[in-house]
Length: 118
Image (cartoon, rainbow, N blue to C red):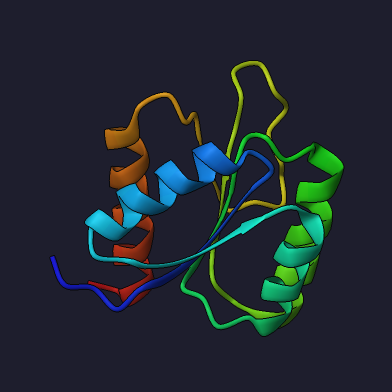
């Protein structure tokens, strides 16, 4: 599936971030992956993304700050990956448990499909 959608994926766990990036790229998405708060903040300020994905390894307070920065620079939706039992980040547009890669990819596809109005 050829796709020009650009996703910013952020995590504090590099192996999970790499795996997520590979999954998304295999589906045809262009992915910018960042490990850690400051590199992610720098990318958020660029605001040239169609979707912002926050990994479940990011602490709640950091997720909130990253979303706040992203919203200043972009109208793209935010997908927060949640741990089981973790409180939902209200400022994110979508939430998914990361246990099933197929569910994650289907959620990403639905979000981006809604965004194009198709």
